[in-house]
Length: 321
Image (cartoon, rainbow, N blue to C red):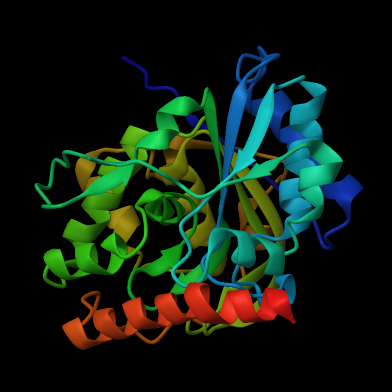
C-alpha cells in the first residue's frame, strides 16, 4: 500500500502586500484543493488566528491582519455564508485583543463576526488528561481554517499549526492543563495532537513573513523570514517550518511522530512553490530559553487577577477615554 504524500505549498513573500498574500492563498488552494471541494456557497467558516495577547502587528505576537484579510477575500469569492473569527486570548477580551491586532475593519468590510468561544464541553483525550474541555461552539461551523503565526516557544520549542489550536480551550483552563501533565512536554504535545485531530481544520495557512524568534510566544523579537505556508496536514506544515528555522527540539512534532499523526518525514511531504526547500533555510533564527511547562499555583492566581483587571477595569476605562 502506497501512502499518499502530504502537500505543503510554500512561497517567498517578502511583504504584507494584500495582493501578494491573496495570490499565495489562491495558488495554494489550486495545489492543495484541486477539485475545489473545501469551500462552497452558504458555509459557515471559523477562522482561528493566533490572538494570544493584545499587541499591534509589528510585535509579531498575533497573526498579521493582512493574512486574515486575504483569507476573507478568497472565501468571499466562494460565496461562503458567514465568516467568524474567534480565539481565547491569554489576557484581555477577544474584542480588545482583535482590535489591537488590527482586525476591526473586517466587520464592516467583509461582514465578519468576531465573537468569543463558548460552551466548553468535556473532551476525552487518549492521554487521559483530566478536566480537558474544548469550545462546543465549534460544531456550529462547516469548516475551520487554522491561521497560526510562526514563533519560537519557551515551553514547547515552536508554535505553528498544531499548537495554535490549543487556543480553542477556553480561558484559564489552559494554564491548569499545563500543570496537570506534570511538566511532561511529550504528554502535553500528545494532548495537543488529540485536540488537533478532534478539531480537524480543513486548511492551515501559516504566517511566516515576519516571524517571532527568541523568547516566544510573547516576549521574543521579530524575524523577517519572508515565507507563507499552507497545507491540510498540520504535522507536515510544522515539520517544514521547523526545517526552515532549523529547530530540532519541537515537542509537538515528536508527539506527532509517536502518535502517527500526519506525515512527519520530509520524504513523505510533497513541497510545491519552491524548487528547493534548502534555499529557504535560515541558520540564525534564535530559539527560546527553555522553561518548564507547568505554572506554579501563584502564577495562575496572578493571571486570573490580571485577567479580571484587564477586562473588568482597564478595557472599560480605555473605552471610556
